[in-house]
Image (cartoon, rainbow, N blue to C red; front, top):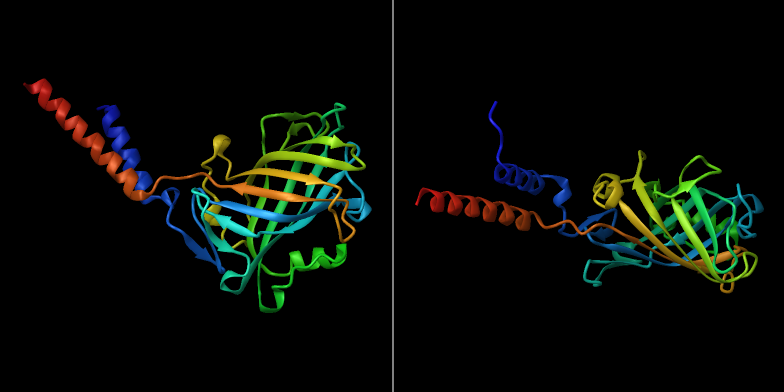
Length: 270
């Protein structure tokens, strides 16, 4: 059986990528929302709390569930240029999340809490459903999830083990100042993966192109000081997609490899 050379394998891989969805880099618009590979979803409005308390209490103990709502303010390309803002094309992009189960808090400064699980669903609002507001918890939960399904995500493994859940954690958070009951500042990070569901953009976001095969990297900041509408905590969030090369770039790479191979053969023949 003949063996493919490393050069042939590289060219074949480049050709495959240039024809696959993984090579998406040109901005596309789905349900009025424009995004591209390398894009960051910028979320400046995020409200959350412990679910069984009606979102009015913070997470303070193992086994409690974190949940909440938010709205995407803008989507920026890999260079930080805004390519979509809330309201463009008459559309808003909101989300509702839950199912993040807390491990026991550890440390005193910072106070660390890891979470397992997690479900995040995004919705596009048009016309009557372009109505996100958070004067109270009930209204926020309703208006964050009454639109058209856009994206369905679940928590992705961070590689850190969560002993209570018996699986890897999906979200790691730290309270940097204050207490669990009164957070001065905190940060979080994790991964999200596309899951089965009715989201119109699921296929476009399902690239498995981040380390570990994840689809989105999550980073957040939060505090108790600016919370409103009855939620215990408020904050901001950024969801980052991987920057996948343009199809033309990959194709040129393949041509360059081919040319290099031909040059090498000529030198050997000489």
